[in-house]
Image (tube, rainbow, N blue to C red; front, side, top):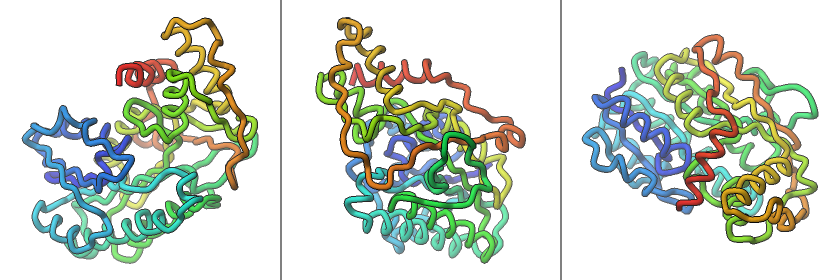
Length: 328
């Protein structure tokens, strides 16, 4: 059992769900949420945690190396779960520099702060790096990404995450830093920033605004409910094998157009609108530069070794997601 866990990016979408889970499940463990509170952060998602005795929020940037070192000394972290990242592909195309600074340099700062505090060849600590399936590039109509898939990032975002993945593994092989890593498919659920596909479409359907879809909406993603992801992170932190990588997916492949049609069907019904009345809002727009066609994860390794698989059906998870956005 870890005594003091640092979670970076804990005011973000995935991070907030993870922080809540850890604060609730490990009441004897200090959970420190470090977040720079950039545009996609939402600290109000954790209002139910702020008065818990084992929870602490710190506003800090992972590019402040001296600040990170001071925090390790003050809170005596024996585990790090690193989620802080710039993550929106469109933004990385417009400004790749901030992605390099945060995702590469920021990860390096955190790795080195942990190494300096724990020492080389530490054993009882854990550095857990959260990454994405986008580092593997793009699939055709068949096949799946696994932990051994060759890296082939296609966007500045995925390239920056690939670089951070390599740094994590380098610190394991060079310094013996006790690392674990996971690469996950697309998350959805309550509290996601509206720049992302699902919350953007939900908001625009509610407001009866255009629903922009890249190309013809044929791109395919594998969707995982965010709380399933948080459960997997918890399990890998405590039970995963040091030096190993775990691929996480929801086994819910769907074309973007089919996803939007599903959202229209559900929301028109919930809002008591005529069936299909929001279909007219769909607008096909010029495709994203370098747009990956398909992502799909084979998560059999973690199922076999740790007994985990995504348990939330797409319908159940989406119902919870829709209810959140309809009431917020």
